[in-house]
Image (cartoon, rainbow, N blue to C red; front, top):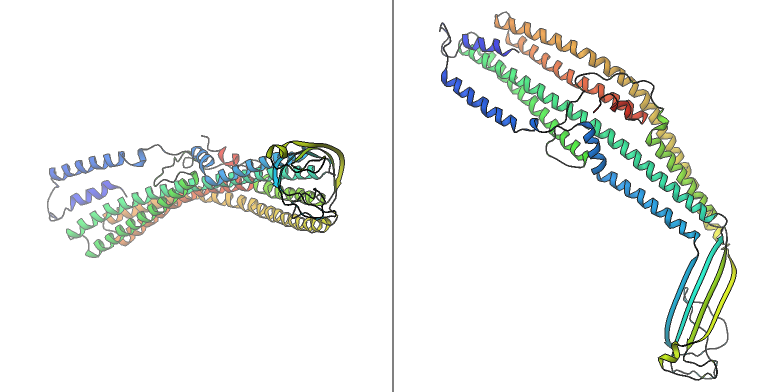
Length: 489
């Protein structure tokens, strides 16, 4: 709606001066308008519109560096790296040293005994017909080396399983990063659409306000029926509701985008960049969806489960160890004549020394039952992850085909909306002129205003949807360069 025409009508039919031959200049009104314009200018200058606008690549960098969930995935990678180092330590020999000082009795008898949950009490001591309860000090120092030089690939299988877990963690992070970047871009586009819709509804409200003022003036002068004033007021209220609704959506989307960047803010402005100066071009040959990070992560889950199952299977096999040990023993009981000395120095002084070298083979034969069931459990996990892989593959295949269809339809719609907008603008201009000439009623003009508003909204939405459909194609292909390559910096 052209404001000049409305102002010309209000000048011809001012309230209370319907028969005045001219419209004299109102100095008070001019001063009020000047003050109002100055206040509005300062208010706008302090608004976020004059603040630095966030560009898309800046939002992506913020999200990558600040979003807590991505940091959690990075911590999983570091954990998997440390796990590999831990498992590799199994290649090293176990070197155990011990030094102890004791105070106790030394009564003993011949015969065998079992340890107490892994703790063995020394059976050494004098064999006498009566118990002797005088305690003495003792000492015992040992050094033991146990090196599993041959383990039938058990350690190697555990190392491979740890490497597979690291690969899975890295694929998981890459997938989450990719999906998060897709969410940021989509949220950015939706916020941009909402900002454009707010501007369109604000322009629509301005039209409705001028429309209402002109109609009120015409009704007051008796040139129009009173129902026109009520209808104009209803259209103005409707325009205000549409503006408030668009502002609500914009505010919610601002919070959503700021959440994805990892820095929650109450207000954020995005740069329109090239999104509303051009439509996206059809991309060339795109990568197969088989390279999608989500599919790579699913494959990494299968590989990790296979590596774990092999490690479980080999855990049943025996180990061959080289063993070496040395120890010294002291006691308050003399090894010469079984005499007792209760002082500390006699107990800590070593009386005998020993060393030992040998080869040891350990094989828990009954562990085969546990290993077999654990292996079956991991095999079911392998089947589970393979099924999940096929499910993911099926979904991505569908998304690839659907995104191509959506992209073509969105482009067609975006090319039609300028024609719709131009036609709605012409219809509005014609209805406005006919209303001014008294050839049509206010209801017809209101319909043309609504049609113009819908056309403006449709142009904004379809343009944004064209870019969103291109993003959908990039998401299905697992390659954001398909989208980012068309917008530059």
